[in-house]
Length: 203
Image (tube, rainbow, N blue to C red; front, top):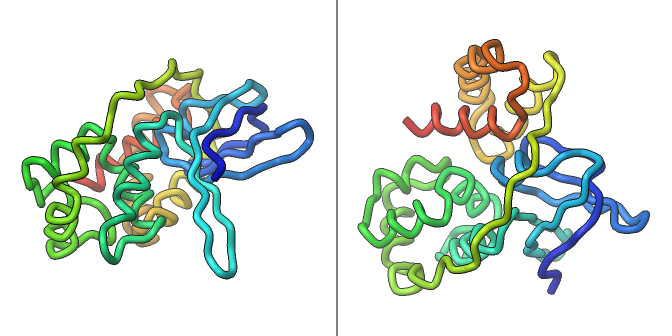
């Protein structure tokens, strides 16, 4: 079990980070919050979860243990795999997820792509007694955001949204909606733009 990794960030996308570990590069799939909390050329620590399949080994990285634990907890629900679990923790941070399940807020849960009403009900039923265990780790300070070029950010954000389960049409529409934010503040990083796009899709 790979619990966490520390290394130098060599590349960042909307939903992934590449860490250099003394010459060994590892790519971890991440939430927008995690991607926005690192900076290329600086050191970073990712709390990780390794998903093993017959044909693949996929590493998921998170900025803190709470987010990682939420990701793993969601996968204990029947019918939910890592892709949907990543979408869940991207849309709902650990505190919001804990509250949504504890209060049986199906509306909040169904804002996640791939989670319908029945899936949300199943999450509440299967996780309500477990969700109280989330939390308590705390999170570190965030690093400066990664800023993308004018042409690159649209493609990165759209690609990140599609990887989380939204259609190309929905992703493109969300990118257009957050374009004004980028125009107002060119220093906004990919992670912040991803989070703004996620919020627009969750409304």
